[in-house]
Length: 298
Ligand SMILES: C[S@@+](CC[C@H](N)C(=O)[O-])C[C@H]1O[C@@H](n2cnc3c(N)ncnc32)[C@H](O)[C@@H]1O
Image (cartoon, rainbow, N blue to C red):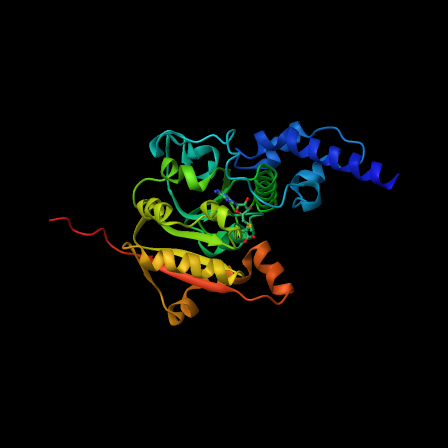
């Protein structure tokens, strides 16, 4: 009986969220839409559900991403074709029909969005994007952002840093489509927080850092921009560090730099995975790299 109740709850919760997500995620003020778009529900108070932070247990998803199952993830054919106004409606100038800002910070494989929520008030003038391949996990982050924006709807974008209009998420495979989203040199920071370790040798090709992929990330990253990596798996740390060290477009930043960089300190415990490692008293391996200028070809 308890099992049946849980299933009914999950179904109703998901129905409430699913029925309005596509409307709410594209608007600046979710509260205005909620007035006429709140679905009917028997178990939950639907209006409350929609502005509360989402509950992870209702977004079940397989533990590991299948990087080859991204077929339904839409992507633009080129960066200039990307409609960012949908993801950051507060930064769209309707008169000029253009965005007032571009995304400059990306969290690749953002999981449940912990880093996005922490970065939002620290970099209130930057647009920050999470890219995540798992569908249910992306939906969770969308609902988290809808709720954060609704709860902070009164915050002034110019003066108040807790408006959460500057964070967004999209479902996408960073191993294939990064350069479809970002122009050359657009990004200032790229985060790889606790990426999937892909332990078996035959799965190494699914690792999010490789020589070829680094060249793609270097394209999106501006000169002087930073790649941040952190993992609890030493073998993966060595893999990421070595690939970055061997790549001609990156140089490692030292521990003193790590201690003084706000983002580096913040990322250690910001994400859900990082907090799990902390609870289990695991190790955290950090490596940060600066994007070097393109070599001059004579
Ligand atoms: C171990 S989780 C870490 C999540 C988050 N960064 C954190 O620290 O809590 C790795 C995440 O990367 C996502 N991921 C794996 N490969 C990806 C890819 N090619 N593109 C986008 N996301 C990916 C997975 O779905 C998963 O959510």
